[in-house]
Length: 246
Image (cartoon, rainbow, N blue to C red):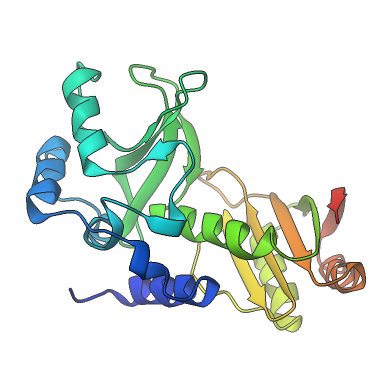
């Protein structure tokens, strides 16, 4: 399968986080992909084709605790629970927790960067909760949190704010000066930042205009490193730390 450069960057990033991570993946069959295309009633987002081919049946270490992204579960849900399929929203992740059954959907009318907007909602509920601009960003953000941010010895969480300016643009300027890489390109509402001794994720629900706040999780080898990072970011943005974890 020929990969788009964005998919290659994601796969290389995942392999750096967890060497040989792809050994635990199992891709969907062409017939399963065709069945999902039929449910969508249109071509699927390009990234979703890559996801299905590489790990559609089983995601290995990337597996979500209570969400099933397999074509078999998606197909079963359409057959057993979804009475009136939406031409706009395609179910891609089934939430197995019956207490809060907020399933994961694509908004096929909102394509972006070779992918599409991701949201949460219950079956039959018109109310939606926007999650990420793309499924690619959602997977990369979760992987960084699971395999580096929550593994490093010290972590803090909070928010970055700006008065009237695009908070993400100001954050990018600060983290670049700090030597962070951005291994997976993202939009204004999500950020994935990495360097040898620290890592950070940030996100906020997508909007139609640039956001003036981002919620972050920053982790590193020691508290001094994190304070120095926050000090530099604080020259560009208002920094509020809500909690420290050691």
